[in-house]
Image (cartoon, rainbow, N blue to C red; front, side, top):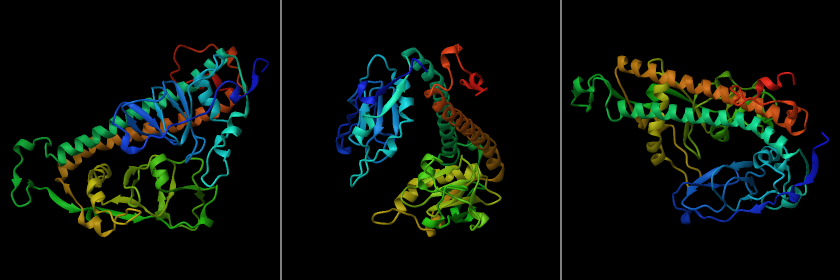
Length: 393
């Protein structure tokens, strides 16, 4: 790598401090507000012009994010909006992911990224043309991941809207000619049933600290409900836990404590932790219908939560909350649509996992010069982003 030069980060960019933006002064707008872990909200004004890099300073220490639009970094972050012309911003975004910022703790009372340690770190950088070529390869993966995420969001929204149209607004096919039951105020043949009558709710296993390791099944907690399985997710071999606590792809999970969430599990097989229900529908209730009914019921559960500091729901409330169940023919008709929709979502998520794994394998190899991109002529588009170029590696 004769053209790769070693530099300290501070020689070509600076880590600037984000600015405080309290919730009460934020006004809904189009500009993303970045916290240390993700976009936290949107504001009607921005602090920094894009493109920029955001790095977690407090909280989620060292996480690297890329802002493609004008943005507002809050005071739990560092940001970078100026760099020398010899560096490509997209290349730096990927290169900084290998810098180990998360381990550069300031050792203060509140963990935080040690700025001096970060900006004094030495990294090797190729010429700008090579940087741009590497960034193009890696961003092709991320672009496809982003497109798949957008498709997933559209599919999930379409399924929820259809559920609401049919079973909340009662605008189902042939609703104009369906007689109503005056006693129930529902279409004839429909009924209201409690959640406990349509599904079993299994609470997770109470894992102890000594049960948490690095091998085996990932332990699914509230964090995994939100973010999926990460490198920091603890694991367990599952030898001392009943099989009923195993969670497979496609299972419904309901977080009933702290944060009320309902998701279809879309990752590898794992083990269910306490504070989560695995929801198993009865034989006459399709899984996709139950999932959407639970999602529709979340505002009701939110009003029923108890607890001064950590909100949670009680099992008895599963008997209190009722959902509308139509006659079998309409339920089957809806399930044909909803089940195919969620199968498409699962397939897209599998593609995302594959793309992330391939990108993460390529990332260190490209950044260390193990793969000589200078000798590669990139096509105009990469339908399977860059994978065929590097098969021999």
